Length: 68
Image (cartoon, rainbow, N blue to C red; front, side, top):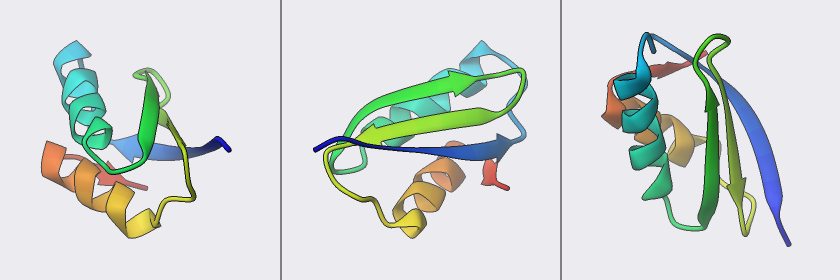
């Protein structure tokens, strides 16, 4: 089973921002892929199970950004 959820992340302005968000989200248990579109702030997280939104928000916050 694969679950994909898209979030809007604010505050990203460059490739380094994208890398930071991908790295932190990649450490969340169950995450198998992270796709980030810098221009829109869209972050699609694919996982092998339903993720708790709080886990995603925590990882994004750890990277220094916010989930809208």
